[in-house]
Image (cartoon, rainbow, N blue to C red; front, side, top):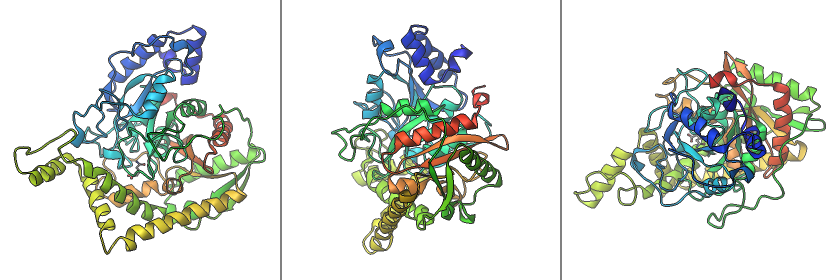
Length: 475
Ligand code: GLN
């Protein structure tokens, strides 16, 4: 059985297609591991494989997928890590979940996350923190920490999560796996419980780059139920590149300088990875993104502003929790929200409501939107000279549980290197690039909108040269 768990998802699918492995056997092996989860990575595990025929002939071969709690899944708890949605079982499934099931990736379980995807450590979940499989005293990153920990620990062959301001890339980095944040609009947001609608984007968590390309290929595409989704131009290719010859990589010194607070061990690993890229034939040069250091400030206005509007629907009437339902309406609304939301969510609702209130709208929200435009323009200019921008994914390795819990600003700084791409809506991938103090470090590549195939290709060449071994986390 341990041999089964060591297969990548693409390898497992190949064996099933060749008739050497039964999809049901693979599903059961993972179901057992997910059920015995000691990391609190899962909030719900499927009891059995869905009855479907002909899995072996589907593109994903019946290899099961773990899904972040905030994706609506028909008849299955979908609580976005929040008490306010306790017991909520939606009557429909998110488009990406449906697309994956149709392509032959059935639902293995739902994964733990920060409440409404707000956080960088998974400590904001109403269902308790997730533990990092590399060191159980440490956080897995967030907000998609359950998906990242599950894949790293071999409790799931692959998983999906969402990235609003780093929530795929940062936990992927801290858990030593691959995480792709696609171009905004590449995957439908229909059925994703919203945090910040102009930023939220679904993407894959996988053990390697090939799996990421394979899973993403079956997530992407226009959906008439999400007017911001787009048809992906061209094919999403499986990666095959063996070198980086002719590629121009930009080092964004505005982000990698002193302001980014990059730990020495992470910086050392980053420099070594850059050298490796050079030895594979890439040219490396400094590049300017002058407004990118302001991205974090703009993000923490825009995301809470959108969240304050999106979360207005949770009032005790339509979904999940209701407190003091026998009292008057306003008491019921406010008591339900008081009891149902955690501290971080309340903080963001207050920040967002304030930033949008009359008299402050122009000063805060309007200004943040202007900064957002400037950041997009910076990237556009950079991509005239460079194929990709390369930088660390996270300034630090996985930190200890509780270390940043009392200091929201220290927690927000984790996203300094991830948020600029989110505001610009461009794709970025994190791949494991080695260890620092025994813990995984992530290397991030970002490209222009819809450059995913090229991005995956470059990441693949680098992945082969790095030769990262994540097997220790699978125990
Ligand atoms: N950590 C960031 C936040 O708390 C990003 C979260 C995300 O991408 N969902 O908002």
